[in-house]
Length: 325
Image (cartoon, rainbow, N blue to C red; front, side):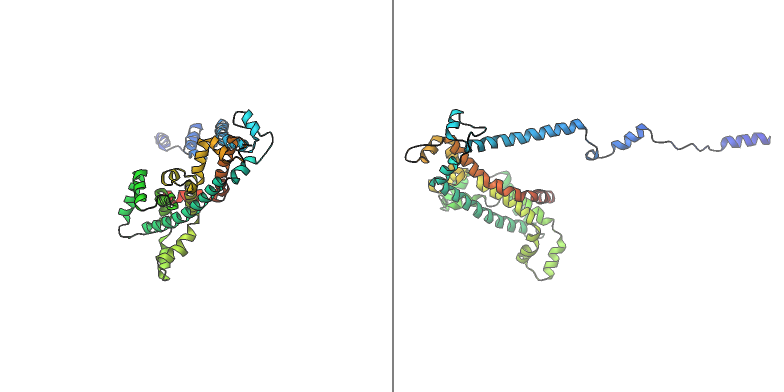
């Protein structure tokens, strides 16, 4: 009888099973829970990405190289090759010397530089001050004003109403018409406002405790912390003013006040007129196509020279302001 009881107790006692080692299915399930960006990319994926990037770079650089080579090629080569040159037979700056010796081009270049510098500074001042006012909590009428500004972003007024307003104010055929209608860009305003809202409130409170007013707080606290976003927004404004040709066509009737891009538009649309304007004593020594490409390069080089110095601010400036807004 005792043997039977012991046998039943032995059967009732739980038996410790050995711990199972994770098999392939468990390991695969655990591995699938990792984020996609932490997975090691496959070789074929890397090759595909590289091919797409190379194709994109080629699509950008090849046209730029053709324009540069055509502007540096001799006139006879361009005429023989049908208007384009992939590699100059002999490098020459005749096209650039003729373009820069023309009074029309040099005057238009100075107009573009003046409008770009003045317009960019004026736009930055207005954008920063308006963004700071809209970013501060408790501003009376801040939200309605922001809604009106966003409404103009979704439904722009158009050129005809703008022309009528400028004509009423007597600003047609003045340099003010080239940058005053677009002084504040809504996208840039939203980015700067979002950046200002991301500044800790403790800094504003510390400035108020030190007796600083709003203007002093903006100049001594906010602006030193906002160099990145101001640099990027300033580049956006500068590129917009520099590349704008349509306002010169719409609001300027005096050809001596045309900016470079408006003059370039006329040269590209009528290349023979360009050659005749830049001829010396009626003798054209350079192909019109080469001179057109030289004007294109002159209009492109300034932005290319400025961009590398601002590039490092792009991610820090624009993304931070856009995300926080």
